[in-house]
Image 1 (tube, rainbow, N blue to C red):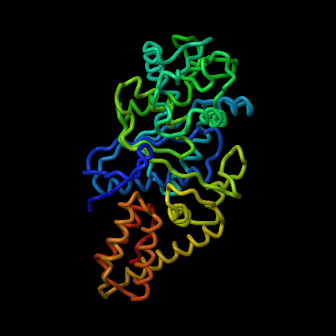
Image 2: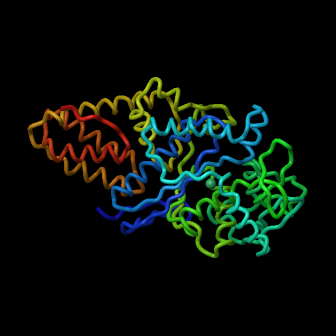
Image 3: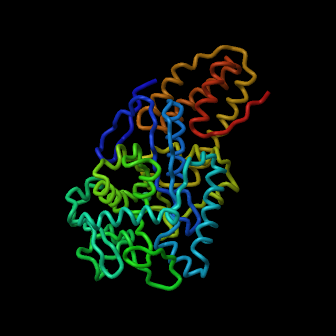
Length: 400
Ligand SMILES: [Zn+2]
């Protein structure tokens, strides 16, 4: 079982995963200012399966998923609701972790919080100022986009289109302290009394969003991350900014392989808090099993945008029942069943850029055969199905 390939967003090509070795994996985590929705679940369930599969193939994974517990959204919401920023973050993080656990996502090895890495962040910002790539203005520090010619290498967005997109995603183009409206903030001065702040060479303030991930990834996965992932809405400006800061700070390649999960749509638009078209995992779990939710999400290829509709979840529930029934049939089986071709198809699909939709088709076909033949080789087919369900994070109990 070799030959696994993964699509790299930076090169636009499927690249060989190579031999089993230690892999530092960093996935941008949640900003816990509100509840998590199905779009988040799609991203984090996908990375959960990726990691399960890499481990199955004997890669030694360090899985880091950060918590953006200090940023503009947190500060705004804590002011609006008059609740301490730390408390707000803890409440929502707890809900997120509970949802992920119910969905059977394995907990990442390390979940660093931005607020606990301020010293590391300041060190990088200071170095970027010294190198002349960043500048201070009224207690804020900005990265000078113009000084980095490769800015845009990941998103491949033309320079004249970057500003409009950045503005939709938290950029303040009219900030009078900026040399260029596209320059992004590395450190921002404390403006209001309620704002959390830390002392720095530029006075009291807090880090910008992008620099947090550079500092946390460097601390836990080194100067070069093997696999860096996140939702595709993070490609620009977040990941583009991460590359600019990190590569200029270390002089090394920041990421070997970039992986991005497509956005989930609902009612014709991207599912997002700002649009208000949210489906909450906690609501779905009242009606459907976590297996059904995982099957529905993973029946879509991670790089392809798709639209949520409840009938998809109903179809996934049928698949869940099919798997469960096949499982029970296997436990009672006596006859031998040839399943080699299904197994081959299953692993080939996952080897091809984690093609979960095709992997599910192979499993469904095998399960239908199992049920039709009423009783199969308990040993081998059972072992394979157990292995396959485990890679996909599905839970079925063997009946005695
Ligand atoms: Zn990030």
